[in-house]
Length: 221
Image (cartoon, rainbow, N blue to C red; front, top):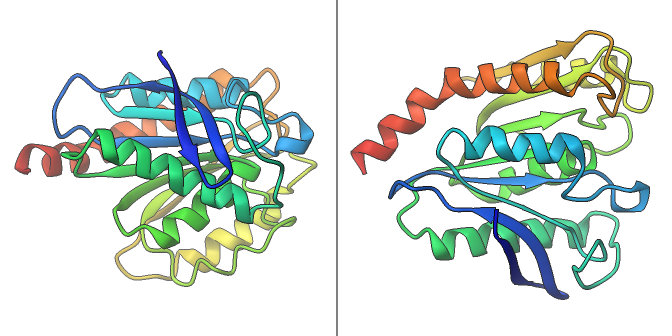
């Protein structure tokens, strides 16, 4: 898990990157929770998400948004963090020029940023949004959502109530050719305290279901 430094809009960004062993392997970018509420790339959910992708052969990057850890800059209420996420994807693509697919995975605030990046980058073919704060941030930019993906939520989430995500998912499910899955982790709060293992079982099962598609694209490249 080598430490990496790459250049963002406001200077240095700090990350951890695991290259895939196979050429043409897909890229995964993992985005952490709100920087002003203790979110970092070492958050337990983010750390475990990272390895869900690493263990399935992705070239995987997690990083600290601006102003977190050794990343330069200051919190920018989402706009700057979206630029950081774009810089992370640019960097990962620059060292994986043969990659034929990309996934975005985000937790809480990171899910909001990840979905915005998804709208801007047509090469992103899949997403995982964990505890998406649909009651706190505007997700109406998903019109339509360009890629299939998974929303996972805890049914005891008091920060971003389950009902707010369900209403968002119901809107997205009306699109042709796009499959939006929604899964619940029973008893889990917003931070998945004591429920990380159950959360990763849900994520892993979804990735295993989708990955034959990615593998086909990779082998055909």
